Every structure is written in structure tokens, then in C-alpha cells.
Image (cartoon, rainbow, N blue to C red):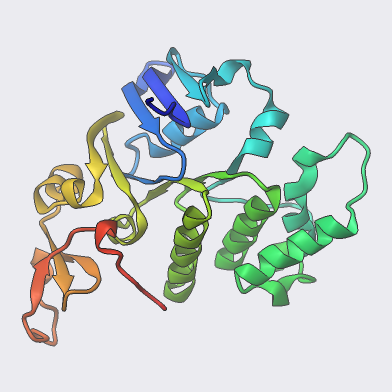
Length: 286
């Protein structure tokens, strides 16, 4: 018996006025997958994410969630099912970080409500999981961009949804927090969560994703296991950049720009192999 996809898009097209942004998108996401969107600026990644969330309605085609047309599903139901982490989030009000995280509980509440002690415990646990519990009483408007991004990811955890759609979640994060975020994605995936995320880092796809979807000029140009999709040739076609996908000392896979050679320090030891992606169960920061 074939499993129904968690999310599916059939012939989705979208545009603004006379500009076509998405062209004939056919895509399926299975429960528990980590799927990464790759593509240059302006290719349509963020628009595709908003269409998948129901924020934007396709001009043609349909989007299904658990077999139901997303156009017929209520926003509150979708908010309990799907957590959205936007690329940039700003607030004009100096809410505490804890208060922003607690907002993830709103889809589970009636119009007039108070947060319960259980809600507060859930929010504190999410902040602790992302190593930002020390920010709980800080004003959201006074913390760094990276700390705000981690706060919004904590809010998504507090939401309780099992599907995460994330638009460049690592943008603004320092290297250590990027690795911690990727570790959490892998851990949550092993607990049954589904992740759909966009990134400008092919390594992030290779390190944690099951699938990579390459988007160019509003269309999907490659879709499949990371080791098949994130290749020298495909990266050149996508970004017009000459890159070698290499595995260093049998461990992590990196994308090395050819124009930079081996850097100003010369070769390390020359032990470079072709990378293969998540199937190799690469470990980092552990």
C-alpha cells in the first residue's frame, strides 16, 4: 500500500502582476523527511514556501496537506499542524523572549485565554533546548539578529506542530549556533518531525537532509537524494560557480570553490574524496 504524501504540489504556478515566479511546480514531501531547497537569490524559494503554507494562493495548480486541498483548511488547523520559521522577523514591541516563545501556544487557545503553567514550562524547555534560556527575560527588540532567529525557532517548537517549514533558518546565526540548529533538526527528525527548509549553504543540505530540491527561475531543475543532486555540475548550473564537492578525511562533506584553490595556507594533506550526503550519517559538533 502506497503511503500518501504529507504535502504535495501539483502544477503550481504563481506570479506578481506580469512576473511569473513559480512555473509548474510538482513536488511531494513524505512524513519524516528533511528536504532542503537550494537556489540563487530571487529564484522563488521563499515564494514556494509561502504557497506551501497557504499564505499565497497559486494562480494555477493545487497544494495538498495530508490529502486535503490546503485552500479548504482553516488557518488555525494549519497553525497547529505546521510551524513556520520566516527568514526575518521583527517586532515593534519589547516583548520578553519568553513571551515571544509562548506565542507558539496561541493556535491551541480560544479567543480569550491565559497561558497555563504547562505552557510556560513548554516555552522554557524550548529555550533551554536551543541554549537561549538565559535570554528569557530579555527584550526581544534588544537582542541580536541571530538570537531573535533562535527565539523564533523556539516559538515554532512551542507550537507543537510536527511539520516545520523554515525559510533560511540559519541566516544570521554564528557558526556554532548553525551547527546546534542542524543537530536539533536531525534529532527532531529522528523523533518523527518533518523539515522543509531553504538555504544558501549546499553543505547544510549534505550534512542533514534526505533530499535536495534545486530551484532556478521559478522551476525545479533537480530533485533527489543529496548525493545525487548536490554535485559539481549541478552547483555550476545553479549558481554559475565552479565548485568541487569533497569529503575531507572520510568525514564531513564540503563544497570548495575552485577559484580559491586550497586557500592561502596551501594543502592540508590532500585526502579529499567525493561527498555523499546524509546517507553516510555524517556527524558534526558531537
